[in-house]
Image (cartoon, rainbow, N blue to C red; front, side, top):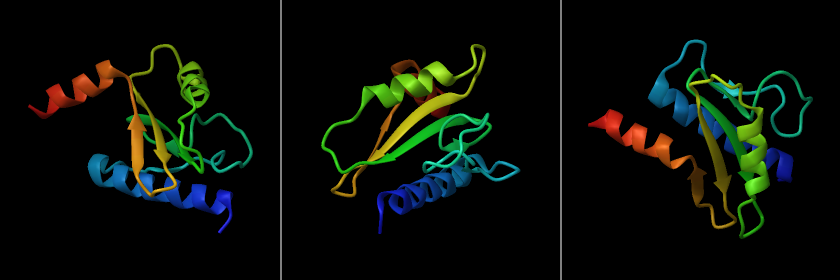
Length: 111
């Protein structure tokens, strides 16, 4: 399996899990620009009403903050969507990067 296929599988997995939580209509899906596809007006790798998601399937042991910065800088100024940078490590472990204030807000909403 090549890197593009691995990235597509990660995006599909994340989209399905987010759909379980948000139950959006239309369903959450990878963007047309994801996995190295054509760039368009969609931001990130997954289209959702609640979050902007960038996914990376890494063969590396480090997380690139350049990817995070690119995601943050592409978000419209008054957006209320939460940015998420999701990385799958070579070990299979999946990590999420998000702003502390977003993490804190999510925890407060669960109370």
